[in-house]
Image (tube, rainbow over all chains, first blue to last red; front, top):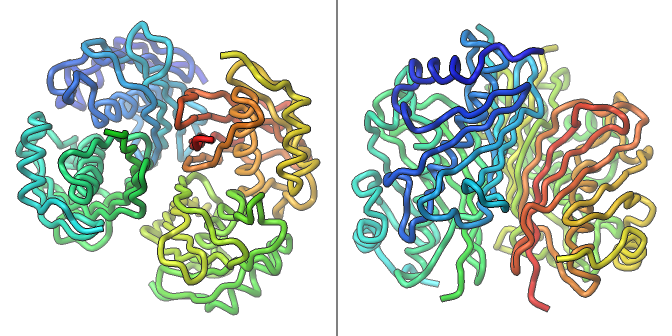
Length: 139
Length: 139
Length: 139
Length: 139
């Protein structure tokens, strides 16, 4: 299966269908069954001590798996988060963008499974791990 | 172990330490090892079709477990999300508040485990299930 | 939706299709979207200190959700574990049977979601929590 | 942090402390924060159709993370499974050994987090994904 949408095409599509998150995420790379997405950290993501909130990291992982699925299946595809899990392992570095490295472990007819490692940009140990299952409803 | 903070005390404390989420959640009930929290649904929580976003539901579950822990341990307690899992099972009803029923299954010296069922207010089948582990660092 | 198979019918069916686990589990109760299953603890389930192994508890949760699904859908139904999560919260009591209280939170056309609390028989605090998603392939 | 126990040392230690699983697993490689463990598939692991049971795969992931932790911390370390999640993504190939590639994402003072990909030996697409948190009690 080949990549159907490149990074800029997915970005334009996201702006169109999810205007609520416009500007929140930068799709840095789209590859076969894998993407890298950046979340520029803004005031609204923060918690006391300068740490990035759990919901903000969840949002980054969630959008990354969505981007990976849509990049492979094309813009006509539907994809809905059905389940997942996460580990928050290290404190994010204050004031530093978050980077999500995501790959699809499965892209089936009905379900897709992605896994994500989230980093503070430039720091080696991952801040969080996530896995997400998307269901792909029939068109 | 008795409840140390009532709903209004926890609400005041949340406003103080998490000003970023001020007004996002209403603590409806605090009981022994259990809380009920309402999320008035706002435009920023929505996705196309009027559905509530995954990150918004995650935020509701996350804050609910935090509230349950703090209510039992008191305002001097620290509590940090370390891991969890979720199932999104039904489409939320458009324009309806989300209600989280949360209870603590364990409140240990080092770890607390909470489970949440999230409902569209007034609808029987749960929209989501979540479980969350908080670590409780020594003071 | 009504229960399609009673406890003894499901037990007979399990013996037939999963002879490998014959005698491992006792289906104590089947109700609407809920079951209770007992695991008599045997030497092979144990770990040093008399504790019950993680895989044994996983097996108990897994079979309980399967039993709950089959009881509702009938013996012709297929059901395959696709994902799940677990928290092991307390040490099981040595030499005591494990009891799994399981209920289905969702029984859809394609996916079923069950949640389980596992107890040492007669002890109040749950030993483990589990959630499991089964996919229900078309016949 | 350097590896404290090599594959054969960990294998001997496992035989000593977990005699119940003697012969079930082969520790193929121990590296820095990573291990590879083989599970020779036996009759007791199977389900109808020749597939490997969920509990057997769980056991493989669980022991792999334990081996990875012990290899890094040494035989005097304690380590207890506290939580985790799994996705079963593809049907295992009948009659073929299972291989678990495991790495530690975090090895803290109190908690270790490992992630596992499980394969049918020689087949590219992973059969299962698992993540496991172990708590490391003070000695």
